[in-house]
Figure (cartoon, rainbow, N blue to C red):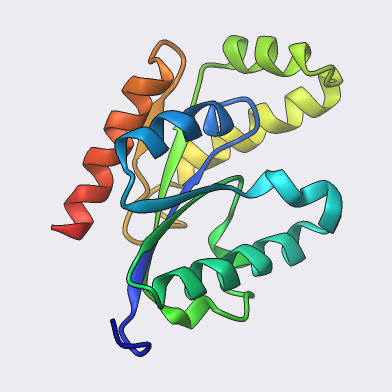
Length: 167
């Protein structure tokens, strides 16, 4: 593939506790032709969310030069991606939102030792994501409910969504 050919980038976003990290192994299994990356894996080494996103967009743009597409999993917003050095290296950037009901999110985040204040913030953020999926994202960002879907079911829905853009 020629270095000037741009490929799309796929981003799986959502508030904390919605199952992004949990779905990664199932997505990798279903989509071996894609590089699937949980962006949080190096956060403790980077320590800055914007810098972390810039690093992963750089990695994804380098992967694209080999003719492979990347799926980034993490809480990533369009306005953060637009600030990244390699933003223009992709033909399109597509987002999908993982979402769960508030009680499920609360239980998942309590298991991680989160405070009720932080849990409330992510509840409000999750609400904002669903309310703005067709306003803040282009094309409109679909939502997958992870409350009762298994990671394998979530991965299958993600695969179907991606295949719509890569046919």
